[in-house]
Each structure stands twice: as structure tokens, then as C-alpha cells.
Amino acid sequence: MGYRKKNRHVGIVGIGTTKFSSHREEVNQPEMIHEAVRQALDDAGLAIDDIDCVLHGNMELFEMVHQPDLWHTLGSGALGRDALRLTTGGTTGGTLVGAADNLVASGMYDTVMAIGFEKLQEGHTTGGITNMADPLWARKLQSGALTDQAACKLIAEFGEERARRAAMTYRIIMDQHACKNPNSHRAFGLSWDQIDDLMKTSPPLIGDLRLIHMCSQSDGACAIIFAAEKKAKDITNWPVWIRDHITVHREETLNLCNNYYPTATTHRFAAAQLYARNGIADPLAYFDVFEMYDPSAWWGVDWLRDFFLLEGDAHLRLVEERQIAIDGRMPINPSGGVLAANPIGATAMVRVAEAAKQIRGNAGPHQIPKPVRHALASSFGGTMWTVLFMLEKELNWQGV
Image (cartoon, rainbow, N blue to C red; front, side):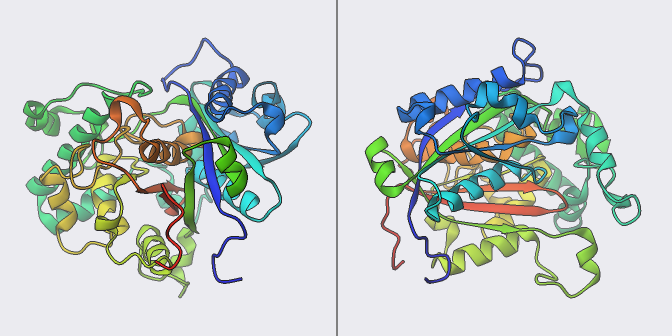
């Protein structure tokens, strides 16, 4: 078998996402999960008995419930069938999708349902993040996701005014997308005449990272059903095919030695590897949409360069010229992205779900106007971990 050649192609056949909010007090965890599961099953036209295996993922430390998948069988439908629980920090949702793809492609199961969720109002997210790292080696990471690392980098390279304006431009575009998505948690209705005021008056968090730049904590769940090629074609007329995916983890302490990727960021390393083995010479031209895991506007701007293997200020110009808008050259996060909703255990899975909806053409009010055949979706978490997916409308990439 050739490298990364699948035994069977795998298609996404059902998608379910809840409304995201700061507080889903009207439902408990199993009930909230069941909303996404019911949607996914109805979307695929399946019953729970048609599912061979259920994957479950969240951040246990955040809600402080040990082995929550056992309780959640009331809403997940996992009782009496094979089930696995996975947790990999912010990349949990992407890990679930990758695992489901592998389980079906291997021939172990014909249909797998993956469920990612978080009910962050019921725990202490910051407390969980700041206490899970080694107090010696990871002392510089104890602020969790609150860092102005990307801001410092962009300002040093492009100057304060240009960098700050690019970050706020990105933020306003994401908010405009979020306002089109009925599931959004944060949709403020920001306008371009507010850009100067927001740059000055939004409360600072750390350095040049301001509150308006940063993602939130959200409650919500996402479920996706995967099926082997023959079954996927029987289930639906519009399966979305997972062409390939890659996972790259980098621990802080590995920077002390000559590891496998000593200089590149995990995003750039993952993208370069994924495109090379799939014959993608120009990712900016190939992909029609990108659902990026963007925890802050600063990271969103910075990471465009890594994911599309750009040089110089090409990534800034994409933002400044608003080519990342829903009707632009490369729409980024038509859903509003992580800045619109961040149910951490589900966040990365939502990126894949939203990219798949764009390919199917049924994303709703935030459907991009041009046809979508090729989509990219990313996950981020841990100490700069990356999971990256290529999704396709058609099974015609062999030999590309």
C-alpha cells in the first residue's frame, strides 16, 4: 500500500451543530449533545442503530467531570455499541475527525459518529489550562491562550500601525461573517467606521492583544457521521470526501534539541507536508474556502502565511484588500470562525463541519457565493499543535 493511500475512501454523510452560547442553562450535557446527534442522524437519514462506533471528545479538566462519555450515553446513543473517548486539548475536535476517518478507512467500521462538545459555563477553563502544564518547563505558557506572541511578531516585521490595522480588519471581517451564521455565540455587528475606535478603546488583555481580538468560551456540541465510500453513496447524494489529513505536535521542550521540524511552525510544516504528498503546488489557487482555527485576530492574520505557504507581506495584503471576506478570493471562516464561537472540545470539529457544509452548498446564510469543490480545515491546540484536513466534493484527485 502506498503512503497515505486509503483502503477505502471516507465520506461525511451527516452533520449536526447546536446553537453556541455563553450559557446553555436550559439543557444539561447529555441533552445538549443529543441536539447535535439528532441533527446529524436526521441529516444522514439514519437511525442510531446504523452507527457502528461512537467517538467522544471534550476537555475533562474544564468541566471537572471524569469520563463524561459514560454519563453522556443518555444523549450520544453510544450505549451498547463500540465507543472511544479522545482528548488532545484544543485539537480534540480535529483528532476526533482524523480518528473517525482512519477507523472507517481501515475497514474496522462502516459508519462512525464523532461527537465533540464543551459546556464551559460548568467549569473553570482558565484554571484547567494554567494547571495542566509542567510548572518548570512550561512556565511561559501558564497564561494559556492569552498571549500577544503573534502581535509582537507582526509589529516587529510590519510596524505598529499596519499590523494593528490588519488585525482589526481581520476581526471586523470575521464579525461580519458571524452575523450571517445563526449558530454564532458572538456577533456584534461591527462596522468599518469603528476600526480606529476599537484599536484604541477595546480593553487590553496582554500587550497588544485586546478583548475584541480574542475568542470566547462557549457552550455547544457538534456531531459528524462518516461512512465508507459505498455506504456513503447509498446514504446521501452529497457526501463530502476526506482526501487527506495530517497531525503535527510540537512540545515546548523539543525546541531544546534537533527534532523533526526544528525551525518551521507546526502549521507551516503540516501544510507543506500535506500539499507535497497531494501534488498541491499553489494552495491559494486550489482551495475555495478555509475554515481556520483562529483563537485571536492576531493569530488569524499571522497564520494565513503559514497555511498557504506565503512569503513577505502577501498574507497581510489578503487581509488589507479584504480578499478573505465571504465574497473574496479566499474566504476565511464564512462561519465567523473561533472568534464567533469556541466550545473547545467541539471547536476544531466545527471547522470541518462548516467546510463540509460549504462544499455541499447548504451552509445557509453564510454560504459563499462561488462554487466550492476543495476545502481546507485546521485545528489548533496544546503547545502549538496542528491538525489539517483536505475535503473534496468529488472523488477525482487520484493521480493529481
